[in-house]
Image 1 (cartoon, rainbow, N blue to C red):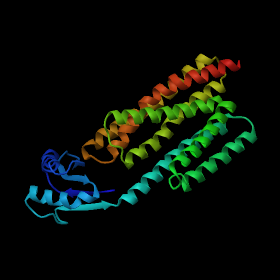
Image 2: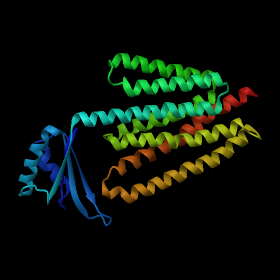
Image 3: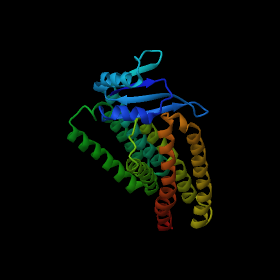
Image 4: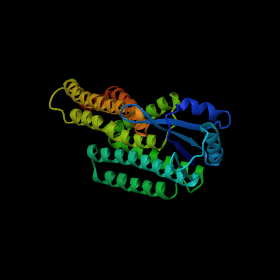
Length: 290
C-alpha cells in the first residue's frame, strides 16, 4: 500500500529528490511529460504512513499549500494492494499451467491421460484461488509442489514436445525476472501483467517449431530451418514493434514503460530459449523416434 502525491509543476524530479531524501528514505519519483517532452507534473510515491510527512515536506519546498488545483493525492490501502498482487500472481500461475495443458492436449495421445491433466489443472485452479494464500504457507507450498511435480511428470512421460514448450516458456519468465532484478527495477503491478503477456508471446514460436518438426514432410534439418526463418521473423517483428512503442511513450514515465521493457527483454530471451533449448529437445525427440 502507499500514497501518490502528484504536483503540477515543471521543477525537475532531481530537485524534489534532494528535498525529500533527507527526511524520507523509501520513496519513488517520476516526471510526466507531454508529446513535445515538456514536463507537466511530478509524482512522488511513499508508504501510507509517510503521507502527511511528504505533504509537509513538499509544501515547505514549494513555498505554497498543496490544493486540488495544484496537486492531487491518491492512497491505496496495504490490504487492498496485497490482495491485488496475490490475485495477479495466481493469474500468472494459472495462465502458465493452463498454457502447458493446452499444448499437452494438442501434442499428446490418449484420451484418458488428457482427461486427468484437465482434471488436475481444474483442481489446481480451485486450490490456488481459494487456499494458496489463506492456508499455512508451508502446507500450501507442499500441495502446490505436489500438483506441479505430477503434471510435469505426466508431460515428460506422455509428451516430450509439450514439456519442451513448457520448459521454454518457464525459462523465458525466469531469465527475464532475473535480468529485471539485476537491473534493480522495482516490479510493479504493471510488471506482473507484462509477465502474463510474455507467456503468450513465448509460446507461439515454440508451437510453430514443434508442429513443423512433428508433422514434417521433409528432413528434420530442413523443417527446423524453415521454422527458424518464420519464427525468428515473428519474434523480431514483435521486438521492433514493442521497441518503437517504448520509444514513443518513454518520456511519459507511464506504467507502459515497465510493461514494454519487460516484453523486449523476454522476447530477446525467447529467441535463445526457442531456437537453442527447445529446438535441441524437439530435434533429439524426433530423431530418436525415427
